[in-house]
Length: 123
Image (cartoon, rainbow, N blue to C red; front, side):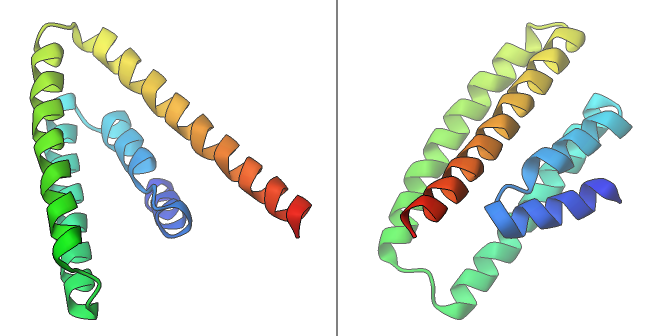
């Protein structure tokens, strides 16, 4: 419940709902179950966003072109990540994932602090 609350807050505020959901998945489920849970969760999230954006008219040709380019890079990086994960022990992979999430969280926090302080300075 806490992860859902944090994901909602971070998703609405920073468009960064992923980290709390990912941490919840890996903290409460076996790795294989967590992976299936995360794939389904983010797929549903993307489908809802795509429907909403299409319905409100926010999609246009340039958006689809950039989405296609990004999709290609996502497929490539997912394949690379999967191959790397196959050769790493699960405890080491888990440690790497936690470090990446921590760095991402710190970067979001620092970026937000800088934006708030700069907006106050220049207003």
